[in-house]
Image (cartoon, rainbow, N blue to C red):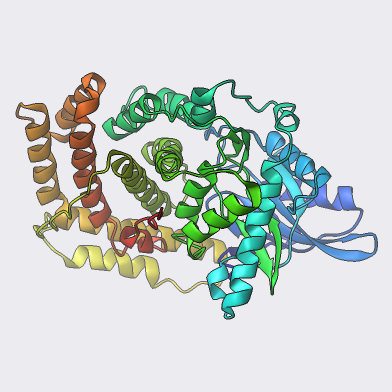
Length: 463
């Protein structure tokens, strides 16, 4: 049994939108047949599915689009397609790429059989077998000569510093550009810490998927690795940091056991310290790329789903830094309710208007559910926002040593403090941002389909 959580909207070719039509027509022209079961995936990034005929056999295809025209990611979709071609040449199981659509820019690839979430495999021996097959595939991928990926235009690191920062530096640069007019002290701190705490004893370079733990399985068989949009040439230890994040949604079992298995079959050591650094790095990368989308969202996005993931990754990045520093993070007191809405029925009525609309239109339902999640979040902001702001201002006053009275003033003061902070102040800043994020996390409890993220921390890595 596998898990498939994607919501799909079936598309009638007779009434297609201008967004869907070029994809349908490309499939029709390229494969020489009428696409069947054409639908759009309703998820974070736009995508489509269809069935086509290849050599007389029905083949499912997946069309992966971008996250948005204004969203910048470290590699392009064309490079991502090239990565699939390299993997195919070396026998690494992954979807075969059939071609590229240029408008909208999208990759057309094989839709592999099976689903995700190996935790649903009832037999523990089969579960372990599938997870080990994933590690086998990842080890095989790490053995591919990195020059083949460099030929795609991917950056080749020349020393341990570049090896560690190869993904993170580009994400830091993207965030600094995107947030130039609206700096976020948390992002400033994460970027500075990653640049100042590079593990200098790591030298082995390999193709790293980064968002590790993404693979499909069918029965007792691992069918392929998937999703390489943030991949880069770096330290293989980073894969185990990525697995910690993936484990929060698609459990991978004992990651420490998978780490030992990888060390056994490759002979390569994966130290705890390197995993902690890359936990901060990969979680921080997600944070840096997501925060600009929170401050300037695109209208088709599920805002609360993005915000849930952004806050969660921010918390996990701090968890990695705390592990590196060897400090514990205390529980944060829950805020007391003190609503600013004079008539509580107003927010309940808004929810009723959004969720009480019966419709068979999957696209409309997706947007209504996103709006309802946003309404629930705004209600919690009304109820808890005042006490949370007071606590944030008090924390800022204690950190910077002078009184601040508004959120804007507090952000500016913390930004300046982070810019001038010495390494011995890192622990204080980690605890400060931990408290801030805990309160932001509280506001998101119960909001939307990704609300489970408010209850998550990363699986510990055992030595």
